[in-house]
Image 1 (cartoon, chains in turn orange, blue):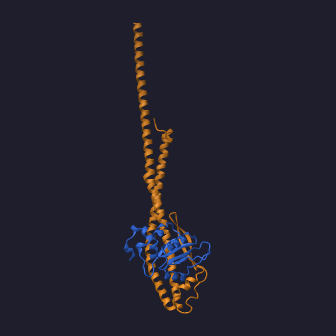
Image 2: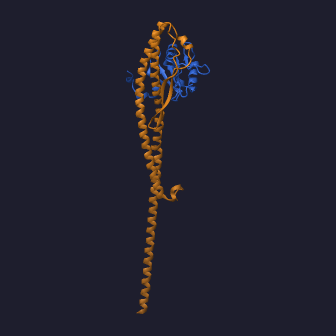
Image 3: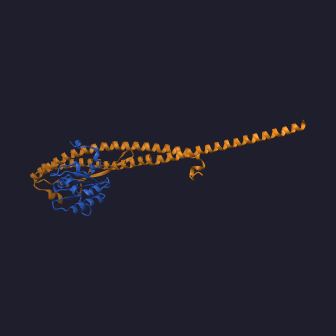
Length: 231
Length: 119
């Protein structure tokens, strides 16, 4: 007896449903593949940019460090004063959202606010070096904010790509084979039922033929008997 | 605090911190807690790790700058940080120039680029 599966009251309808599902799964898999490809492309772009920017950052930081040494030489050691006089940050960042192939990437945008807490530093001596130092570090900060954006995008994309690939694999190796197996089972069932029907029909035809032959023979016998009577 | 504005935190040696503070990133929050840590020769690794974790826990810090040689000390804590925000950036210090092979972020994409890209 056929297994008790939900679709087997109407196997031909089940076949249609399964075919539609298979098509759906394949379309889904292709779309996801495209998404994974788009994300991977962007990922590689970002990685290249990160490498570029990090190298640049190394240079910018070196220059900034030099200007710090110069300023210290000119203005004396102002480190303690600077550290003690922290109050409000002048440079902050905002998180904005960027979108790539349906994945939202966090992006940093830096902005300035308020006045320079260190306007008076270096007023006594070394003012020019301190000003140059401030500019260099401000430049470094801008570059670093950009780098941070690239990094967050990188990390987010990495995760997104892993998830998408996992889904593609799941569809390809689990869902589609499952549907295909069910589909082929349905088709075999249909075939078998058709064969059963065919067999039954044939049997019935044979029986009918046999019955007809029997009847004809009987009629013939009776007719012969009647003939004999009339001789 | 500005609505969506986030701070740039710094964990570095004295020169690094001084430089960035002059760049304008330093701030004390309501509890007079700073968004930077000056790491000296006698600063314990526990203290560095605690500060790093506290920065991660604060929701007003968007970026954490950390000298690479300090990042090496708390490498496990940095590798464990999977979120994209706050972003952790490793920067070189005067004595320790930037070494790409140690950077947490770039190690995630290990196979995807070669040393030549850094020339």
